[in-house]
Amino acid sequence: PQFVQIRHLTTADIAAAKRVADANRDALGFLPRKKLEEAAEQKRCFVAVDNKVLVGFVIFRHRKIDNQTTLSDICVGAGSRRSGVGSKLIRHLVNDCKVRGRDFILLKCPQDLDANHFYQHVGFALQNTEQGKSRKLNVWCMPIS
Image (tube, rainbow, N blue to C red; front, side):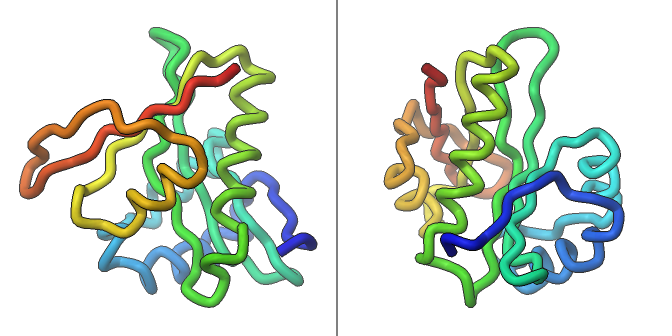
């Protein structure tokens, strides 16, 4: 993972990112191709590339109304998990937030997903739990210092 490159999603990456997302639909849910296309166009997605293979991505939005950055989706392919790729994606997003003068990153994660352990591990703090459409969601926050 020390050779994993983090960069913006490009239109050439969309098919590969969609494959990673579809392989992880159980945790991620359905991620429409259109969402990836818009994220690429608006530069709201970073990808992790290992030896020219896209192994993960993070989709986010820097809100205009305040200094919140919302992390909407993060996904690392099964073969690259627990190798630091997800942490590297988060660190890259944090650095981007610092450059842009953001105050914090906020995300919501279904309470029953293993991803909650990851968010705690990389420095997010559990703010509260709320009822989502079908299950309880943990609300995680990371201040940008």
